[in-house]
Length: 302
Image (cartoon, rainbow, N blue to C red):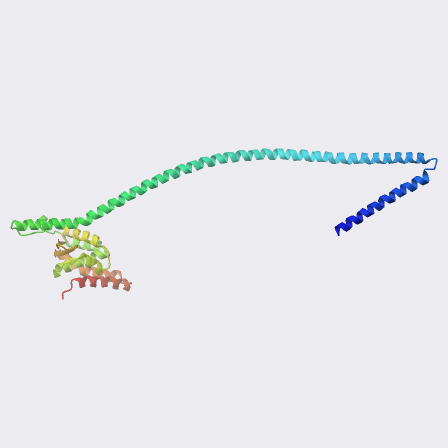
């Protein structure tokens, strides 16, 4: 469709050109024989020149006016560009300063990170050393009661060898001078499981049955044989009870005697305490009463 329109427009142009040429030819043929033809032609050329001159003047005026406006706009734009360039230069300078500050901050952060990494490594090594020392201390503390028992056994063997009546280290040092108030303070400050163990010591001394710490921990569902072993050594040291390790058995002791006030108060004190403290919590009360029963069952007489 576009090609047809272009071809049609081209034909109209040809026709118009031919018509103009025909008009020129007809005009030339008609007026060239006239004696005033040259005058007419000269006048027409003069008028045409004048008309074209006026058109040129108006065109120049309009063009110069537009050009002055354009130059004014260009000048304004140039000034604005100059101001923007100044602003951009300021922004570039600020960006450079910010970049330098950021580089300095990155360097400080990197140094701080390196120092922190070194500190963490040192702290980790320190923690490992502390853990090693704790393990060593734990092993020494757990072995201390056994060594005391061995020392007491050796002492009794020496006493037997020289014909003396064997006595415990506690008996040699001094007799028990703990008051009733001291025993009550001991029961008040002891934990629930330690109170249960005090009951076990009393029952063992009363029934003359050996006290097996592993069996006791299993009965009350508590994994703390090392702690209980140290607690028994403390009771022995302050003369709340007198115990002897049974040779060949781990953490099994014979409780030869207990403090009279401990014998009298241990069971009743803890039972009354459980009933009072768990007055509004029947489930907890039943749990601890069941543990007391489990400890008593370890020393029940057949």
